[in-house]
Length: 352
Image (cartoon, rainbow, N blue to C red):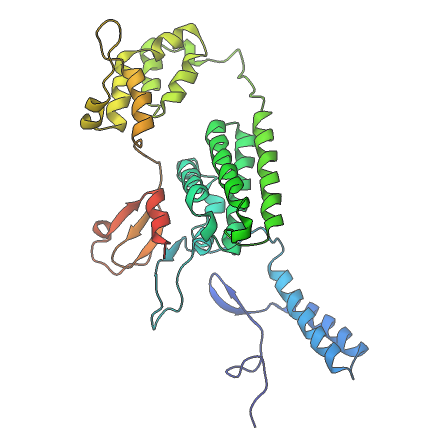
């Protein structure tokens, strides 16, 4: 006679998947579920359908005990993911973008200042080209991460312009896609996307209402430093708009922001000599106007991207992981097999 249980390979015991492997439920969870089960069975012992519904309620209660907060993804101890694009005998199915959000722990990675710009750039690229390919769980993870990014900016009062541009790109993409809702271009209910668009407008309003608090006037400010140090700090800025904004603080900084050598180094940092030669601009004095050339080159060519910490892909074991973390690899020289992954390359890994 066959054994009728939850699993024909086991005596019907309850197991849960954790970061350390499969484990049994704790005694407290079992006692709560058993007491709940006994109450259900005591009220309707003779009704088969009520017993079935009671069993469903017990399973749901167990699931709620494990997932107290629906917004928090499943916690993975190892911050890496095996990227496979087809089914094999060892692995069934393929990796998705939503799964990568969880396994690589993007929700906590945005709290790291080294990874912040990388993730924001990745979210911007997804907003421009990958919204129609996101699954339901990927959409939920994307919006949760975006909400955490906005909350971090509101608290730290940093990278405001960067997040404004991200929200503007996302809103423009959604407006163009929602208009074609009859073509089913977005996965999910259209009312859900309209609600998300309203949240984006609310976030934009909150960013516009930020009042940046000034530092203590008794402390040292940037203008108190020597001129050579002020210029050295400006040379560390990789965005020309930041240099222009810094020059609007005071007349002395405005004079430093017009330095020709500063803009010349910025042009050579982002663009090649061939690109620069095609966009030469001469001012009234017969000299090259490097500042105007920079903004003209930005409109024509992509700028160089540099991040404090990036994702790395191992060509030997096909594992994607963060640069400062480790991954299980059988190669003799793991450093030669690892290549940095740009935000656009990350999206290309999950295109099928």
